[in-house]
Image (cartoon, rainbow, N blue to C red; front, side, top):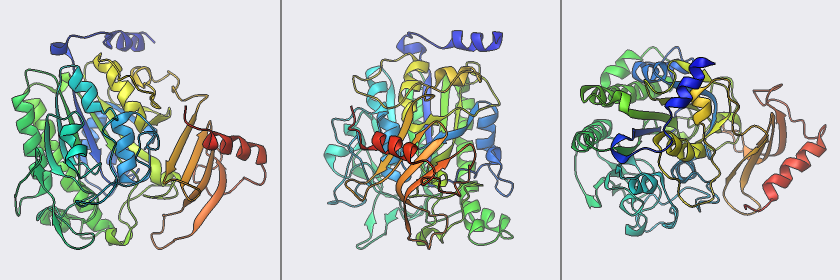
Length: 441
């Protein structure tokens, strides 16, 4: 208890801009909940991300804001449920398509910029493809990466549907780096930004294009994992390539003496993909049911790590519930910066990070997920150990298209979500359904 009190005392209440911690927020794309060595994977090579967990705090019951890319990102950046933030589904992936984070929403970048931080978006955006919805209009001083949902990592073209679109931009201007591996470009861009802004606090939203399909690991990693079954071998090679480049970024912080002045967050945006474009799998949710697009645990329960050596515990794990919307209030508290004047759905995890015995701020409260709008929206509610999936599908097998409705589980008794207990507990179904149907305040 003495140690916990000490850590709590070290958390800043009000901090001058020059003394505030830097923040490097790393967001993996479609990385499964069990796909790190520190989360139990025995067949992957993730030494640098595992080392991040060893010098920080690792969550074992952490949830995304949604089981798909754009809503998940909106929840992280605004601290608000995606439906409240105006992003109920995926945003534009090509010019002219609809869907964006509304400009009136306040992002982490705007919060940190107002507190004197230099801010950068590096990597994937997928929250708008117009000048009005560009990262530079959402609080970022610097932007580099692709605006749509994914790119080929060497040609930097988006090719889900024709015509193929080149999608690589720096501060709103199209740039060409043909043949250069996108994870290398990201690490170099971030390193230059860190060096240029080392004398003032910085916030970097480092949103990876990996291990999202197309799986494009280096030749050496493909050779290394050739004995793994397909498509795990392809996925493992891309995860290893990702981890290797994160090691380059962490080494830059060490080189500049910034490790103890920098809060590093790592999270996946949603579960691994079992889409055809992802070879119907490759990633793993461990014992959890579901994957990307699903509101079963495999689609929304994620790896999540926060490291701040010297200020927070190291090498510890937390079983308390956390949620992606919690990052805004958590980082505001850790860095001593004011929160935006907006209704937030996230709650600060600062006390949980500092003290493993602290209760989750979500204890006694409910969590809500919704993707889409109207009667065919997918949704789920968790309250305590009870979770009701009002509508979703099980994407564990990417070939399945079956929709499930009114599926009630007790996660303490049935963590694999194998048995629907709705018929036995109609009163719990009714209570959780009422939470979903209640208007957002």
